[in-house]
Image 1 (spheres, one colour):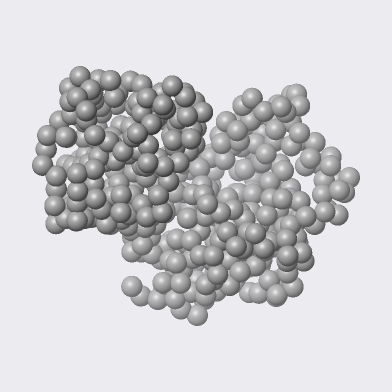
Image 2 (image 1 turned 120 degrees about the horizontal axis):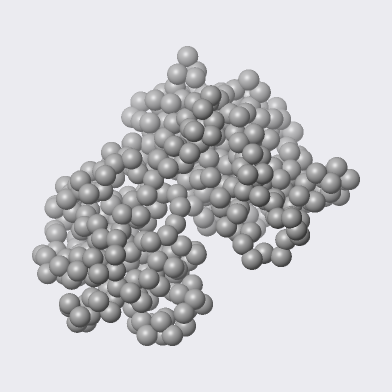
Length: 409
């Protein structure tokens, strides 16, 4: 890999979050820019009042929760309390937020963030910004440098879903209002980067005069062996994953039992608590199947023979699908598990697509009768090749160079 950005300085501006998908993407960005030779500076932007750059002690818990960034130069930014108590903030930001306008509050807080003196003195060649609401900080530190902004899904859609059932004042902020704020901030970037094909298509249509690039995130690889006999489902707790797991357990598993009584499978990840909250009886019936969260997810894939992806809901790229692809294992999946990818999963010969409960049960039962692949077969599988071409560290660095290198010439 050539160090295309040797001697260059890159700022990665990101929300001050941890233990989430955005944080994993940010870690991948930092690793890629370093691999390409750049000096990397991470700038965490808080969406909490009072988390200003001057109050270093208040950031201690965040720093403790993000040790993976300790090898990177770090700065923080956030709004001081005096800013959020000002009349303009109460009128222009807090009042819309009380009506559910999450785009207004997130952007408004970033606009009022203070920056440390050392950060204000920095000069960057490229600013890599994550999420539209961090753009006010990105613009301030960029100067004349180009800004690459990653959209991380259509946030107005996410806000609309989050607002459902919340005790907001009426009238409730509309999707259109929040989307307009989102698009307005995005116009400040030189290039818009999109993590999946669906949001690339959406924003290309919404902002036709801007340059858009599809840039899949780099997803850490998982082992392709040595193999074992486990049938696994990997799933964390969120609304879409819980609904998908309930569908699988309630609609698919009884059909599987008719075709292959006692069919083995394990459910790995934090989704168990979500299923318990959604349907306590269903969870109790299948309690022995739930493994819970594990420290070494790679070991789960290493010792498996088959991965199930019973995904019926969700937006954005599915990281667990990419991880399953990297394992090289046979996959039984719904088509929705491959959302946001610009290639046809039906062309991958170790993937069986099944969208109805009956089709999924039949595919699962057939897969149980097939011999388990060895490590060599997994490493050479179609899904592993697709992972390496689109989602590996090398693929990410190659694509990032194609997009960003011309900006410095």
